[in-house]
Image (cartoon, rainbow, N blue to C red):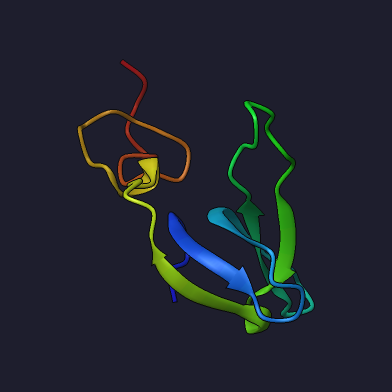
Length: 85
């Protein structure tokens, strides 16, 4: 499942936020980075959880840059192999 940009909850701790990153390790472990909402203007750090602990609770309304195809080369984006302009 593609979690990037989704609102999620960790089923063990109840931690909620928007998925801002996804990592997969050689051992087969897959994790997502969950960014909680800012409180009183203060940003909190993203926390990483195994994907098996994550449930999607909604959409954030944010479209990840890697999914935007505007012709601009970007790391991980659809035009990542395009030559620099």
